Length: 446
Image 1 (cartoon, rainbow, N blue to C red):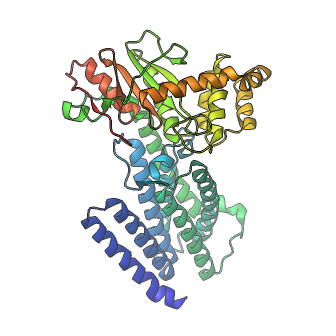
Image 2: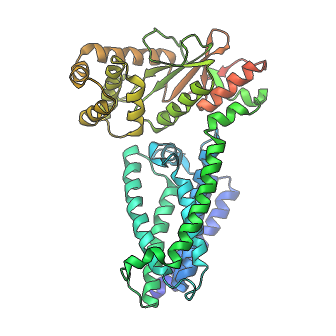
Image 3: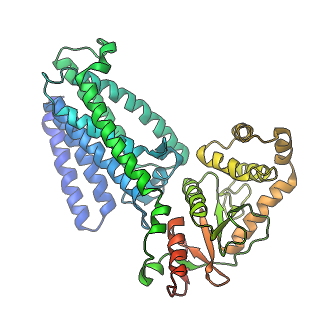
């Protein structure tokens, strides 16, 4: 252990810090970020060895940094992937846009930032002013680790790894180690006088700072509103920025009148959305588009399913993910009872749970006639309706979800929105303002 603390941790800190600088110089920002995260983790471990309170302070600040970065990605609309998204299963954006990234109407990252700021402030106190700090920290760390396990399982269900999230999970483990070390040094026990924890100065300082920061952040989040509302109040971007937001579709985009419609069917701007109910980005897009329609009655949305499973989609190889196809059929059957939007909202909130039993439970929550709904699930016409949407998506050249096509900004022609609903709204706003929109560029091939 002495060798580890005396030589290994300092060496690792230096090696990864130097590596981070070198990768940054080689224009590898993502890998540089990962190296900085590892270097910071090693530095926090080294600090804990020398001083439990110092270790808690630095580790809490590290968690604030990681969560602050994730929060910034949710706070401001971005058109480029985050530094911790490099493709494959390393995808912070996917996790950070999923239903698991929010609680109580605000980002979990915001809640975490407020808590770790409170913990860092309390770590600055001394043993006389905050004598039960190590006990409170250790108990909070245990709760945080439990929640980290839940979020890890959620991430696994999404099929993605969020490096910044993992750094926070490791930080929680380090905080527990620091707490136990501090308890040993002060000859205290983890479960001593639990009833008095809630009136201890350490607990009160942490929760008071947490409450202040959370209320400030919550207020700013509400004032800011969703990124869609923010875009709606801003000036349209210039031509150079606009041309990046849309492209020429790969194929012919068409509607047949069977699509569920959100908004006024006569609205001049028509958005056709192709989505998959197991796609986190689709869940975020669905929430954004709902707000778009609420705030801009000139826009209507027509929904088409495009399950990313070879069980029903010929574009996909293999038959894995058959539950995606089942989810599409379940939505179709809910739509036949006039409950499409409520059912799909429920499905996006409970992403990853698309078994028949889970879908039946959601259908019951939405007040569907279950006997009729179950009969529809096995009705070949429901699967055929899903198949028609898939074929329409293939003809339109859909290559992934969500896929958004906009009509109204270029006459009767559809354009493929390159990024998000917020970018679609920027195009609409520019068109409404009389901006001369450039001709759409060829859509990129994925």
